[in-house]
Length: 146
Length: 367
Image (tube, rainbow over all chains, first blue to last red; front, side, top):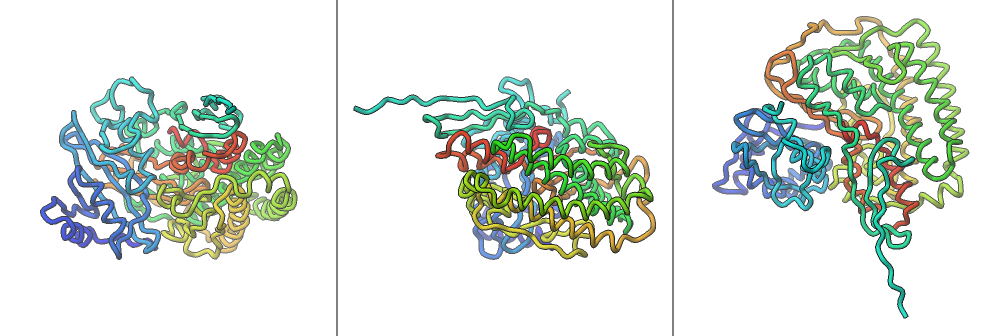
């Protein structure tokens, strides 16, 4: 059975690796700053005992006050999982560091979030719309899109 | 004197016999050899995730049927699993067994289509697939018996299933298991050792295990690359921890292995159905769930081993009757992430086979 790692414990492991970084546990998830997601993910993928080698799911939610990008990570080696989150408060200029360099599987999923939610992933090699066409007005999955 | 050649850009799709729907590939060719490839999707995008935000939790179930329309039961199951996790609903025993029977029958029906269409792509035009349709038809008849529908079943409900099995279902299923075992043997005899099939698929489109994991591949594509990973075993949902079954894996990660894994999985599914039939208890078929279910504030991610891979639903609730956010993680779209790596260096005809061996359904890719 896949074990969901305790978020407090994982958060403290991340905080120890990135001194001074903004890392906190929120319920079952670990929340980090948007500009350091890629570094945290690279750490989570390589740190002994964690080894999250598999990106299960990448998506986003619009809470109106902020956008939340959610990463469901799994380690096939240890069969454990965790939830990583990041929050962007600027609606007009939401930016998150891309994790395509860590997991190739993020490629289409980040493009989808960009397309439907309008969050830019800095460092993505080919960030363009995927389900809708170039020139489509707005980002339909935002809560204020009508 | 050297010959000057020019690269040719070819559009495969959106309407193309091998896409079984509307997907487009921009393929750059040097003579017949693929040098680059780009996937263009979205032709079937209906905004199902957005539509779900304006419906009640139960009303979303028919939408999930329209994702991967070759395995509607599995989509229902994935969605209901996520909502039940969110709302903390306990599903009655009998309903769990019925769900497992349906999900495994659906896996066989779906793999039959996958194998049939793959053979189509290989050039065995419409002969093998008619045999596959023949056997899938019998499964669809059973689904019609329980749900009244032949494609969009909407059979599962949050907390159970919509109606009990009719009296004639179990004898019919027992006959079907015998028939299917025979049919799968027949496919193996006709196809697995076939010279043309082996020549076209062995060693073609190899996906290495490292790349398979790194690119979040799942389902038969992941297992054909030698990774023994199946959600039914790794994170048993429903009652899968009660059944004995093997996880077929292959070592080469080529098109043939992806085909072979599907054939073996059908046999395992039959084993699971037999065990479930033997233990099928009497009792309730649906938990007491209000018609307008209001899961508590929060979020849940539920995922299952669907025929085409790891199908997940991420659902956020704000405590109202409609989900605040529904995200569907589409296994087939993600399985295509490495399409370029698999195809570069192979001929155009091989590209069609590689695409067929990954097995996609556009309704799910585009949502």
